[in-house]
Length: 301
Image (tube, rainbow, N blue to C red; front, top):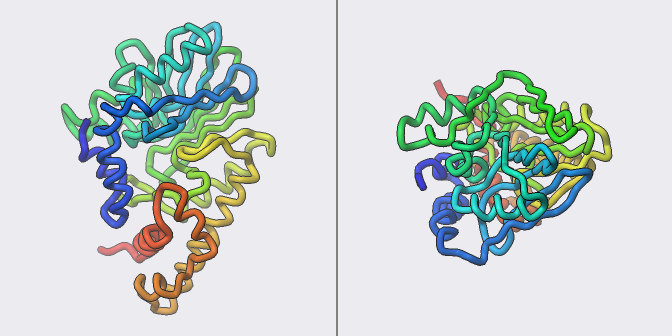
C-alpha cells in the first residue's frame, strides 16, 4: 500500500475520511470479515460491493462465455475475494477491467490483475498514475487509454466508455452497458451520502453538476445506476442527487456573496435539510460545507 495515494484522494479538510481510507487497506489485510457481495442485475450483468468492512468502491461485472469484464476492481487486498466472487457466477477468467478514475479505492486491484488482464482508462488516469513515478502508481496504469469515448463489444454487449471532464476528477469515465441498461458512474455519484470533489485531482463541483445533467438527459429512465459508493440506484435517485448538489452549492454561494464565513454558515446550519447525507458514511455535513466553500472560492493567482 501507498498511504500517500489515499491521502491524495481524501484531502485535509476532511480528516475523518482521510483516516478511514488511509487505514482501511491496512486493516483489510487482516480483516477476514470483509467479503464481496454479488447482486444480479439484467442479463449477464452483476453489481459487486463490499460488506462487513471497507474494501473499496463498487464494481460492475459482465460475466459470460467470453469471460469476465469488470468496471473498477477495489483495493488490491480484495483482489482474491473479488475474483472468487465472479468465478462463483461462471468459472471464466477476468479478461478486461475498465477504470472509472484514478483513485486507489477503485483501481488498486489493477496491481493484481494487470499481468493477465487488459486494463482500460482515460488518458488522464494514465498521466496521473504514471506521474507519481516508479513504486507509486505505475503498477496500476491502464494499458489502453482514450480521450473522449470508446466502444467495447464483449459478451454480446455494446459497452460505451465516455469521458466527462473535470467532474469528480479530470479522468472520469462512465461506463454504459447498452443492452442491459446499466450505468456505472464511478465517484461522479455517491448515493445516500455527500460527494467528494477535489481541485487537486482536477475536480470541479460546478462542472460535475453540468456533467450529471447531461447524463440524465442521455440515458433511459429505467437505467440501473451504479454509484462509486452506496447501493444500486435509479435514474430518479440520480436526479435527486443532482438537485441536492444544485441546492447546496446555491446556498453556499449565496452565503459567500453575503460575506458570510465558513464558521458563520456552520453555526447557522445552512445545509441542515441534508443532514441525513452527513450520516451516510462519507463526509459529515460540516465537512461537506467546508469542501463547498473551498471549491466555490475564487481561485488565487
